[in-house]
Length: 268
Image (cartoon, rainbow, N blue to C red; front, side):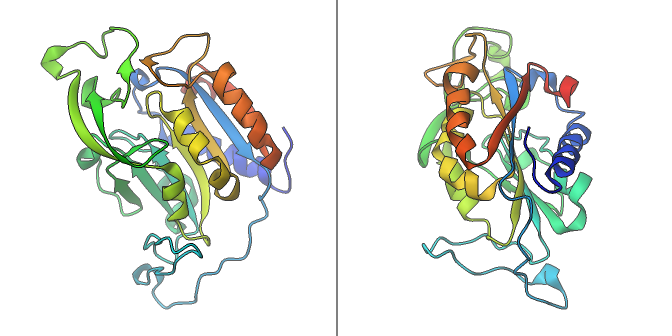
């Protein structure tokens, strides 16, 4: 893997943080393999545009991008953001674990957002993510809805067939695009880490945001399928057919494929 400046050390810190923060995540959520990508095009970060304030925790960023997109009101003390799309009830807390008080986590969770414990460095967005914004039906599966998806399961299995648990129940959820979320984060903030685990919609979400990703995100971790085995029907998320061609294309912008493994926490 090619790196520039202190990129290698920063990458290792992020991966170790994911391991530390994720030790309690249930293996039931890992219905595919895991990919990690590293962006090497901007590891020399630009000087912060933050204003000098006496109490930065009470001063909010109310600016807008040139295309008039409203920005999130994040404290001016925030320098790094970690995003966990499909977090369920246990979002990865890189801000708390590694980056300290000057970082923030964003958890995107459509089903059990109200069950995520409060943390002062965490914002929870109750929504699903796909290639187009709108409103869609989502099917709830597994304990705490950990296998819930906008797609139907490709086979009947223990995680999607227990009627007493409510498996298969339909709920209506708001849907956003990944690019809209990234564009709402002020440019002064580095998006240090993005993790998606959205039950078959990972490729669709990343592909929609590819032009924004190359400008904003330094590290990406995502769930994929491999070996011609897929858990949901009607969506594309295969390592060889979908992901590697996309990341080869995005490699022109500095992304490099690092590795994949069926069991994420045996690797990190």
